[in-house]
Amino acid sequence: MNSPILVWMLYLNREVTTEEYEKCYELVHNTVPHAKSIPSNPSSGESLRQIIAQMMPLLMMRHRRIPRARWRDHSTHNGKHWIEQMLDHVNPEHHLRSMIGYHLAWENSLIGMVMVQGKQREVVNIGLGVKQVAVEPRDATVSAYVESLSHKLTELEISFLSPSLGDEVVLRRLCILLALKSAYIRAIGQPIGFDWSRLEFNISEETCSGDGQPLTGWEFRLYKAHLGVQRRGILVEESYQCVTAHFRGTPDSKFVWQDNNKDLESWVQFINIDQMTNVIPKLTD
Image (cartoon, rainbow, N blue to C red; front, side, top):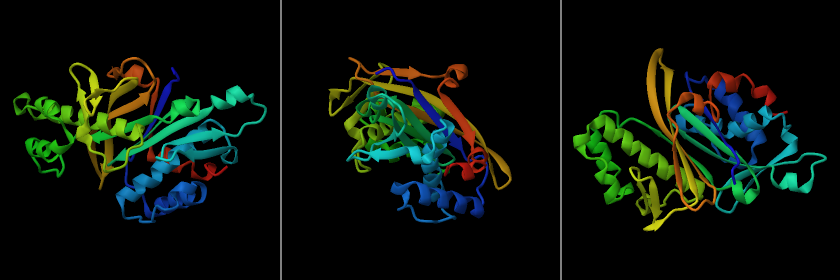
């Protein structure tokens, strides 16, 4: 199970017009059957993020030059998606290994898609966690923000967030923990109400457990995204902690800290909203 992971990250570098939203919504409504339940709401940032996220598989398959009529989007009973390519003159073994598992995640200005190709059972357990490195609400202190999220953490994890480390370190560590947990929870297809404190990540020792039992066979890749986005004519800088989680079936779990931009570029691609809206007419082909 050494299939390469690929990630596309789309950032909303500017505000989207109502006309653009409506074009995106119409595209998704007409071409993504499982997304028809998303209500149209041009004034909602969350609705926009959901719509753009559902366009990511369309863009990915367009990039692979696979016509929309030649692939199907399937999902497991717990909502894990994979794409089956309906290609001609392909031997059965190759067809079995051509499934594309993917997961979509978003927060504020960043929308991501992680994907991996292989046999269906090997590709569905994949997830992406995206956490903006910022307190919420924006006028909150870091200590108050940590306290508001402490129910998602274990005692050991909280011990890594000592105020003596300084706000910057504490906030970064908190976002790493939350992104790790989010990626894993999404990878196994758990519902929204899952108790995050059942998971424990010991970052210093690079180990993880669930309900006190070691989680083995997982690969976690951690990387950062630094964005510059226009908001009401003002350039705003935003930082995000991102994590991919993929079950590879190895004896242990592995943590890969991707701090080198050159290495990151080999498997993570950043695009902006203009690159998406410019190709809307082609995504139905």
